[in-house]
Length: 100
Image (cartoon, rainbow, N blue to C red; front, side):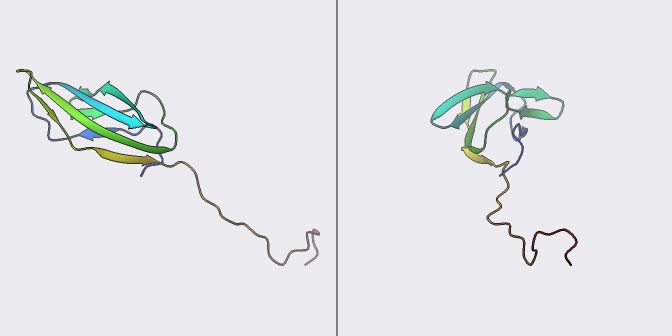
């Protein structure tokens, strides 16, 4: 669970000979595939737009120089930016200023 609407994911244990890494994101019955970014610290993925609250299921595909592909197990991430306040109640106040 995260309260970030654009979380960054560090994609670990990817072989050095990987030439393309993609992340498939399923939300609300729709799956969209994005290219991951290779930096000095390895591969990362940050959604290009903010995500609304809800569940997102991610899976990673890796392609090497020879064209072989490998797929990860899926990971479900919940975005929750709302605070739950069930009940707020003032107790022992008549509502008249300076009545205490």
